[in-house]
Image (cartoon, rainbow, N blue to C red; front, side, top):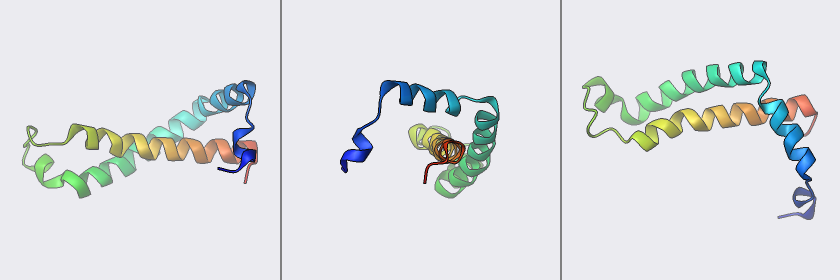
Length: 85
């Protein structure tokens, strides 16, 4: 890993976290997570969900299908807001 990525201070982390928790970013990321998460879950486990076969649903996979889009959307929003490339 290049050294430039390791040179980050605690205050910088707090600044980025503060931006990530801004209301407009959180709401936008939640909207993205709901839409993309539903699509991913339909693709991955649609048959089980359609037939209400909840015993065989992989709940970790179901949750990750929402967490990952939320994280990516938040990361992108923070990056744009801070002007990073």
